[in-house]
Image (cartoon, rainbow, N blue to C red; front, side):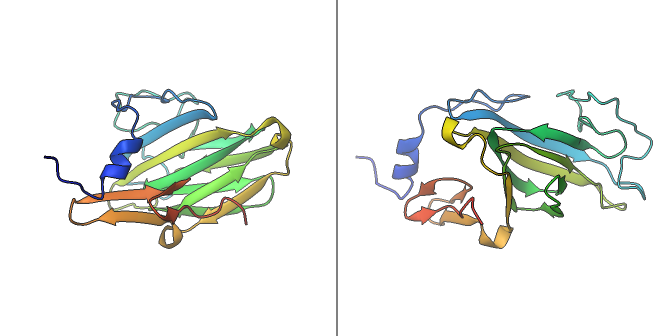
Length: 196
């Protein structure tokens, strides 16, 4: 007879398990895009970039230990537009610098969570500054794009930060299991609000 554990509700919600690929994941509606970034950046230089490396604007090699993406000197995604959807950027390790056309700017990481509603349109940039000059700058995060329903496609753009200390977590010490709740809910724990 199988012993019941507090993991049973979590396991019951899992529909399938698939190994993470080396690019965007297959996503059902309303998810437009989901990608897991894992970059093992070296120690940075005084300009927060990779010493001796210059990006070509299209560096997405999945077999490399790190990528420059669209960045030239600092890895990342310089200013670019979004419209009609939301992005959830859930950091695990490392630092991201955000700027946008609403005047928001800031540095976050190490468990922080950002919700950005593009709605009627926003231009933003997300770069990965290599702030440590004396040790590596590993970066790990998920980014999820959620399609907004037709009625909400042209809402005013918005931006909400949730610091790591406020992000909801569930833990079962007996079974050595943890779950970070970026969206939705689990058990009786509901995620932080995507609105201000």
